[in-house]
Image (cartoon, rainbow, N blue to C red; front, side):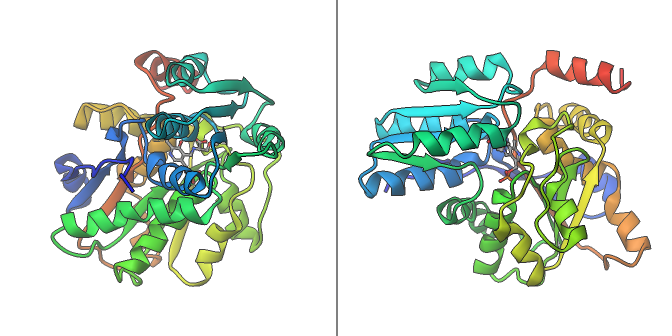
Length: 318
Ligand SMILES: COC[C@H](NCc1c(COP(=O)(O)O)cnc(C)c1O)C(=O)O
């Protein structure tokens, strides 16, 4: 089966290395053709659905999973419908239509769009393409770690990811266990107002947020996949929710440091380094010495210079 994702660059960030005092490596999923890491999992899921005889993909998404599904369907030459919440910017809706997808806007959060998707997917030949909660997605995402293991000089001291519904986290952990990184802690970053994983970790059970109030709309799953919470039972995961301000500031610093623009959903992971959280956790005794860190730069399309300016004005960062 032809891979729908590309092998992405892994590079050391000298700016971040200077901040932490040890090498910080970036896995640049923001350069995937559809704009985010999503294509690894969604591409795998779409290909397997097609092999099962499905001939129409229907995907619920905050935007990036939808773009990955539209891109995959175009490559596989089958139709694709994407259901997005009202919080998805119109330029993303237009981008989806340019990719050939039929787009429906439904509800105020991803959960509403997903309910509609499940109804549409009942039609004969249709495949339901969820954005984060499926074993074929986690299997596809695991490739990001398989590649990183080949590209890194040695096993990293810690791995940092963003969490929306927990598909990226689940796939990264699956990949880490495949390559023997079972003792490498993972930092699960969210933004306050989209911190359904952190709420669940604190409660010790799945929690559903009342609403998504963060600017990081692509972390906007009110309830994470059960599989993501399950991982906390057999892997060291540090769950942390940063503020929108810290996430947007991280995007701003990343643009200056690396001349690449990513969404606040990705800024949440970058904020772990820019807010020097490793040092905070080491001082709290939550983390031992680190020789290196790997940050999954998940990317995202829901960003522009205009949007960055609006967020910075809104958050008092201008
Ligand atoms: C509502 O949205 C869920 C999903 N975005 C998820 C997402 C994540 C978090 O990945 P997850 O934890 O959901 O697998 C991180 N970084 C970026 C850029 C993302 O787009 C979507 O696009 O439908």
